[in-house]
Image (cartoon, rainbow, N blue to C red; front, side, top):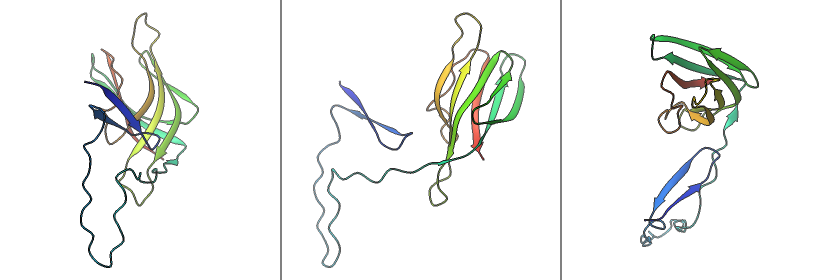
Length: 143
């Protein structure tokens, strides 16, 4: 089975299996209504709005220590052995469903420890997450 990723707005990818979607049959058009968009027409990209600070929630799974921190874009914070660097933080416009995303560089100096470099979504934390045996990091929002 072949797989491909179709990426639109800066943060969302749609997984398509087997070469794409099934062909669409045009629906009948009622008199006086504009024609339906073609199946190949793409919706306009969602414009995310930049913000200056990311709100992060961190958890040490060993000692159950949790913390919430605000980290400014372009700066770093420490939690345990982790260094959390915020590269960007964006929110959806007011007329869209609420969501926030932060581009994070998370490093652990321990040999062989996993890191994370990419976007984390507040509304869908499981889509892109740090896979670390000791720590958990989530984006709560941006402001």
